[in-house]
Amino acid sequence: MSLKEKYQNEVVSELKTRLNYKNNHQVPRLTKVVLNMGVGTRHDKADLEQAALEMGQITGQRPVITKARKSIANFKLREGNAIGCKVTLRGQRMWDFLDRLINIALPRVRDFRGIPSTAFDGRGSYSLGIVDQTIFPEIDLDKVKRTQGMNITIVTTAGTDAEALELLTLIGMPFKKAESNTGSDETAAA
Image (cartoon, rainbow, N blue to C red; front, side, top):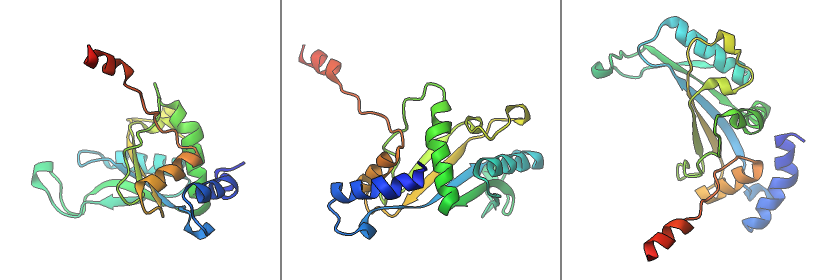
């Protein structure tokens, strides 16, 4: 079963009962996933092209080259310089990417114990930073010249962070488990 089918068949009804909604249209849903890869100011044109190529392989969609909006002398940045790339995924590509992220890429992270559940923005969107792009199986490790991180933002229609957390948890995002502090309570009482 694909992630989209899981959402439609299981998650909607579960969220409807948990959050006491009367209508299926009130249930929060995913609207888009935005990937952003900043290469920086001190790079070759080949580094930016390589980053854009790798992001295209990961997402299946050609990225847009982002440029600096204004000049900042301390960073040796001039207005209009190419500094990164981004992709906005919607529809079936969004669901396919999330399926690969949750089930294949995140478990490949070394010493992976889950992603933090505190990275919500207050309006139901979740942001995740990935340090190394080679966790995605689409990347050929022999052709990687430098490791590059990326930001992934998952935008939902949820009104609060709690609703968005419920939605992403039911979809299958591997959030960190809350740790109990029983050891610290014993030392504080002594």
